[in-house]
Figure 1: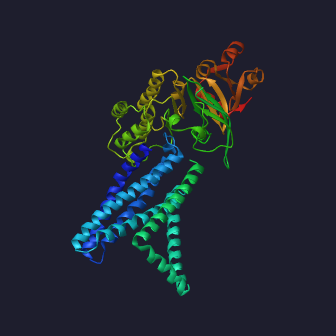
Figure 2: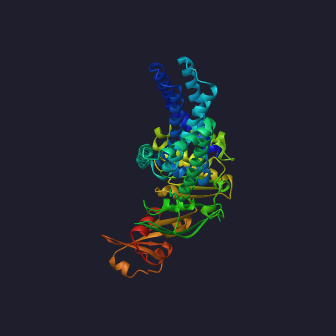
Figure 3: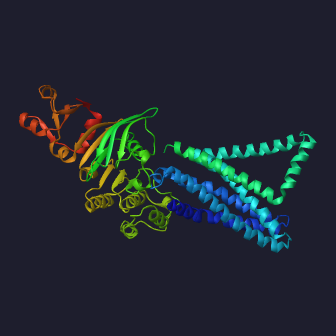
Length: 222
Length: 284
């Protein structure tokens, strides 16, 4: 496990460093040039993009039939999946910290007045979103090779967009009192409650995704 | 016994592997056959990289499904078409190896890299074929493995580099008598000078298993015209091939034919002849 983590960190260090630098620069540039860009956006942008990049370390493993050799090293299929998720969670936390640093710098530069609680709490939500994205991409990436996974990703995101659009459309036809009840429910939860709910959803997504990935990896032929 | 494969069957749409073989402790066993004969498939099955339909495989007493970290630490592998990710450099591999293999000898690995001119600060994807091949071997021999499983380890190497790599395998065996190697190669001369015994695989089946010494000393190629072939005792003929001038026959007792048929040409056997005859000739 330690060996795999070192491998992925080394891969990420060489390949991800450029991406990270670009993300930070682009985010700050957007923030300074267009004052419309919220510091929140900067955090979300960096956290989510870098977390998505985690799944692409699977492509680096796969490059030039590399999987075959990787599986002859002293690891098991189970440990490989464990490592990918642990690495993903670590990177999302790291990306979030970098995003927070960039976002906070931008916030100070813009002179925005956001309370510390709201700033941190609001941004924690993006880790949850990053985990949900990761949960979707990881099993897809393990199941399909890089070419097919690209299509699978596009289809998946199109589906999410369609479902989200569908829900907003359907919500117009949902009885008024039901909507009121739902919104009342969220109001009673408060900010912390909503954050806890999102965290719960993200963790559940990760768990389901992990179980799927384990299953996919067990069945994989190299 | 280091490795024992009994009745391994793996079926694909257009290919079926049906193979039994053994690798004894202290021995270097060779596996030869043309591309697509089943060498890599057998090795993948041994390592648990693919499932198989039936048969029994025991590697250091464990089936492929039972291989855990502890067993895999004791195996060194080179695969023909796979290695560390091309997006890594040698200096990235060193800490990975050190974390994965308790027996990894960092100093020896780095010394060998220098000896074989493997750059440390260059992406593996930018390596030449020869450099990649050398790196794979160095990775396999520097972590105190008990068993090396080498699929075409000398492919892409020039003669001098090949000899140095073969010497590394000899050194590896001399360090500990209980070690073993299973090696596949297209280059017969590599195997002739290295292996204790040899398996020839053809269309998914083992067509010959023989001690290398016996193959080189007792096998022969009989060249006979139609008349000579007709009166030839076929008892010790393994395989026959029709040629424009008559027949070529592979025998495992050239002395018998030299003694009893002084008028017939019996050439010394070689691995190349054995492969050609066992895969291209008609087996008797």
